[in-house]
Image 1 (spheres, rainbow, N blue to C red):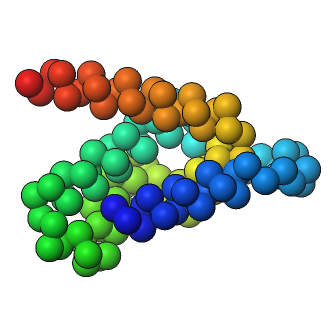
Image 2: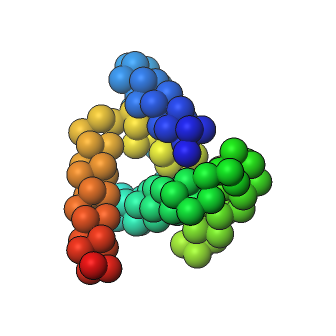
Length: 115
């Protein structure tokens, strides 16, 4: 969880920097926004569940990585594509804010349905 938050913070910080080269270099295999929302929501929920249920295991990177990889595989994605897409969206703060807002909505709905 800490590594994910560190990656997330770094991406947000780097995303606030303006680099004209990034504006024209759209990854050819960028993950669509709607899919990115679902993937990021699932990763966040998985990490929270692991931290809640197995706090001693969360420090073992392999457990978190394998769980994250299984989520990516369920969407037919790999980590490199996810990372490129995340970095791309992080550059565009309005889009990333939209993604976070939709993630929050999605997680809230899932939590309400499970109660």
